[in-house]
Amino acid sequence: AGINLETHRLWARHYLQMAMKRPTSVAHQVASLFALYRRQHQSAIVEAEKALALEPNDITSHLTMGVTLIYAGRPQEATIFFNKAMLLDPHNIALPLYYLGLVHFCLGKLDEAASFCERALTHNPELMRPSIVLAVTYARIGRDQEAEDMLKRLLKGQRFIPDIHAIMYLFPFKDLEVSDRFAGGLLKAGAGLLGETLDYPKISQKNKLTGQEIRNLIFGRTMIVTLSGHEMQYSFPEDGKANRKDGWGTSSGLSWIEDDQLWIQWKYMYEGLKWSSDIYRNPGGTTEKKNEYFYIADWSIHSFSVVERKD
Image (spheres, rainbow, N blue to C red):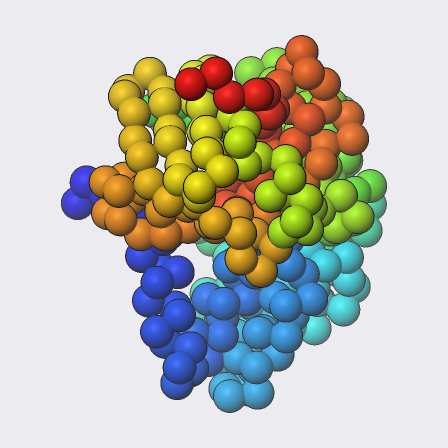
């Protein structure tokens, strides 16, 4: 109790690294999803294949394989895995139905996408992501009021309204055309609550920074990160230290570059666990909006700008 999302994910990553010394199908499933949310689509597919090879009749392995194919831009190939999951467990079909809805959304078959998501919610009304996809799909097919009502019900009772970054993090489409279609429907359904569609992070591997590019970009400078309306500053002295300053206080720690990723380990935050992020250029970013770059960690995507250090 009391553990925040970031620390929860970092412990999960820590224990996954331990589990991968003698991996089970579950370990490969988790590794696949970690890779997927970091937009490492090919690695996600490889891990899902390993999970299936270990347990060919495991329902979750089939679902994991299908999900990775959807987001890797191969939605038609994903269908067989969701159909197999329903055959293996015909009493628990909410998730496969939802994923089939997502397949049809990617294929541009929006009426069918809505139908599958509606069926998924009749089996399990508490599922969050089918509700999001249904709201998006309603918005795209002109059922605007239903789209807005669906999203408002979903957000009711939340401690904060998630921005476009937070939601799009959960839907790691490789195909930018599909991603644009999704973000546009999401913003239409959100009635302006979620930010501007042009500001959402369009992630392409051609814009990913190498380790040396990250080093040249940030060391000796300060990252300005805007999160839920609050501004944070990450400064990186040349000696590999890291400092964080925000409305809640300051933190210090270490920073380094490894495997083309920025690594940080705060002295007191996140229970001392180290964490990494991949950094991308944002071609549509501007200095005014402080979003020329963005980083992807194991829990979110954040836009940022870089300025010369003032401390």
